[in-house]
Image (cartoon, rainbow, N blue to C red; front, side, top):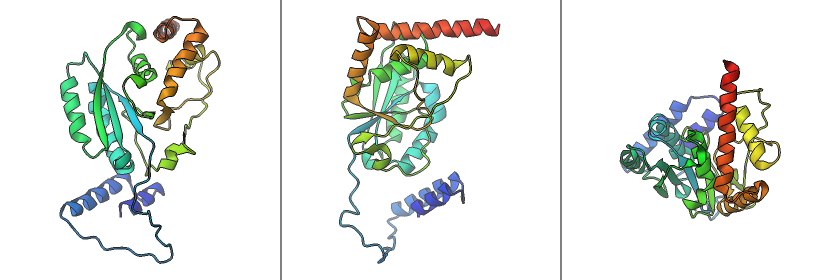
Length: 265
């Protein structure tokens, strides 16, 4: 029934709340040990492995969050994740600022609400001078160093306001053993946040930005490739370490922000 309602929702016959209510109703019946009738369709013979969960590569979703955004956004993320992501492949890692006064409460809330997952855990990250006090740059820096926090073969980057709108299948995330990355090209204006992002991206890559990946989460990469990426940036910019490269990038964005503010008066 839940799958039927999802199909109806995707075709605009019903609303999202209808899907959630149906799912809650089915879950309530399951808790009452209701015996659902067996549906038989002779037109489509059932494969021998139909009841076996599909095998996924070891993927952990990487979620940096502060307490305010967690409180505002995580309930929506979790509802959609619970409905649409296969629970046997659900591995969540929440990154919490070590200096946060709410880190204990945030950890408790997160772990108590993710018991349905295959694994869920919290890691603390320490502040550093490498992002020049810019919050979103701290988040980006954490993602560049994700291999310090996870040993999973693949890491999936997602924001805590991500909403999954349909059932996620392994083929949606991996094709022929490689991650699926979907981006879009957007022509930017001459100023503003996303223009600054494009400029700093071009600086660190040594070439123009190809696409933005903010419309299709998670963005999945092989974890070991992050080390190769950092090494490439160090060689490209002749720096002594990746943190030196990132500190330069963050300073360039800070300069660009100040310039934009001056232009706006």
